[in-house]
Image (cartoon, rainbow, N blue to C red; front, top):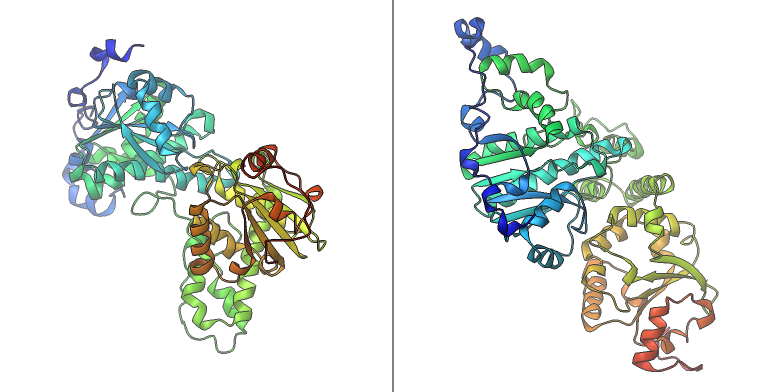
Length: 496
């Protein structure tokens, strides 16, 4: 398809029929006509009939790339390079400039939304988002991530003053998300957003295929009823979980339990108090990293708990992560060869190697990366160890975020911090030195004195024999090119 040769194929959204106009035109049921006051009071849906909202929503069978909206939504992967029918069509019509601009975005994490120009499209902008991979085991996590895709795309449209948005079905088949489940989330998220911010957006178009259209037509009356009769008839078909005020799935484990008579714990032991205060954490998958729930909770109740109780709480949290690390498939992270055990240093301590260039931060699931770190390091950290981090030839897309490092430092067991004897930062740049100094000075404590900046491998060999380290070839090549061949020396320029 030639994007420059097919402008006539583009579709003016103002010419499309709204969901409200697609009403079958049948008169309201007599019961609703005669006793409307009773129906409104007793039989109202959590998604009541709203003519103004229905007039903003459009269900259209066609290619989202052809929509003349202010922005259309593209569903992709974390690298924004996914090959799927939606993305392929958008790229074909937009032209090669789109790929060039996407490279500047440096990827997009699951649930996030990022913006580019539309180039040769009729749409002025493209909102790129990444839908979750669906696993029944982590259904709630997938639901929350998919909600975030729609919510963040709409929020971005609102912030940029866009009048219309065209949505594809974000949950692609490649990510194994059940279509009907995904449609519930899409519809209720858009509905809740329009209830609050409807004045900022004039049109929301759901661009669907023939198969998707069948499901959307079936479920849209539940969230966008076009008559009181349709609202009333749809009540019995609404799912049990309709989300919170924004349409986001509600996770019971995250709801704080409020006891009827707070303060009557004088006879309870400290451990029992802790269990009651933290009973809603459970072992659910959502007792995890997104909002660092345990850390927030600790900040709330730390004035009431002893150090021993806080340590028990921290250990419970770490053990939950460890249990997940032992059961989850982490083979894709292992294949990166970004973390591995090698020999021992001159003091007989285990040496762990981290290869910065092998960590594609903008592409991989960083939570899985943390799980892999815990899986590998749990048995290593029980005794003294050192880490050699090769910063050699890393790019912007390899740099670990300081917030992620802080979360990792907060989550890991105390043995990690106690038994780490040295961290050798090999081939640092000026920027990395400044970042490391800031991080170890203001963000975490007890690490600064263990970090050694290593400008050349010759310095490292004073602490670790070269025969004890499994080097990535590019590290040796870089060092030889920049610093010349290494030679054995009894003198060290590191203060060990």
